[in-house]
Length: 581
Image (tube, rainbow, N blue to C red; front, side, top):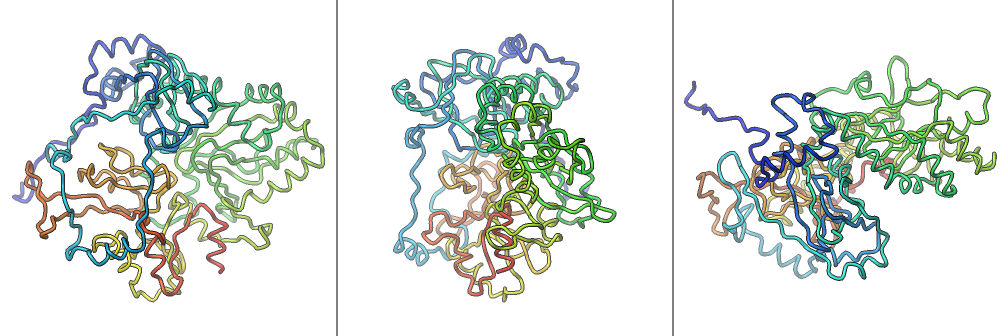
């Protein structure tokens, strides 16, 4: 063995259990409760047994009356099963201040100028590092269990009186979709009296759903009972249905899932995009097959494509809340035979859909509309949908032709760049490489720019290596301390410097290479060394979108040639306007 090589033990899945206070007798009791008692332990491999998942990927939490379990709009990595007591799901009506959220502050003009004048001479200077907050135990970055600070609401009945609420009782599950898809919590959940909940971290939830259908069926049955009607009612086509008709549609609705939760692991920025690569994506609906209802995207992204020569080309992508197959379904209702689908739909990563069969639509939905109204719905939907999310080659939108060249659209979808809500796009035909953007970023962030002016390219456009504040921020997966998080007020993905332990999990998880690990210094310029490992302390850094600055991103403001913009790459209408400006 070379002197430059050191043999180390490979980290294991359960190196740090989710709840180190879980006992074997706790696991025994869980295995007697549904849905766990209905699971077959033989369906799990020896290296990942059901008992091991419950022992290491769950924990039992106690909440006093009025205890806040989850907050609307925040991101979480776990789901909850009610063991004892009950919880109240608050769909609307609570003041954000009651939930413990801090008020957001921006620097004034004088403060911004003062911070630039006082910038340290060396990069990444930290005024203080609180030793009590340093969580590194050894060079494998094991994390100590921190006692979580909880907030509870006093006088709960009065506070919830004006809010829309629903009650969940023992055996019911909530939070699973937000945990598995990294999407925001859709409601605030508060304990109703004392409550004991089983919290399941997303890795264990994923493995149980992968190995057995019991948990999936349990969750789907609860969703059908508690939330499906709300989801259907929010769909414009179904919004005005009577309660009886909506109930009939809900009964007929089918649940389907496609793809993989860990989609980011399959992205390879070095590969060339090939026309046949679309065929590797899970097929949801195939072009040319007979229409048999509509699909509602419940979560995730899906590619809308059409045959082109010997391959396929992307026409659009659909996201949460959007509909597939409506035009064909409407036309089929008045035709002698079923209309054929004009496009294929494939999963980009993980997609959760609701399928409403044609028979249910014809019996309970279409009769509520006149023939003329249905014809307008079909015509409107035929161009692939809204200006915000879809690419239309057939109809001007907003008075202008919203058009993107097919190679650019393929580029965005293939590399999952449509995930970026605040991507840095640079027009290389206008960019003079003056680096004013880089200097402005450095001046705003401790003399160290938070992005790299390089990245993947398509034609004259480059997507720079700057945090895109994604719709699905996979960088949050596995952060042991929660240091990287979504700001609930602004949607910006931020890093809490005090609780970042430098484990590199977020940097390794980011599929776009937009997070970097840096050595930090004290005000004298000395590199900070961890007292246990005697190694330099690293922190994760990335673009924070200049959240505390009055004028927004300094990089965009500094560009003298209008060559740089921060934008939502999922808003293809906005991107089209910028490309053709």
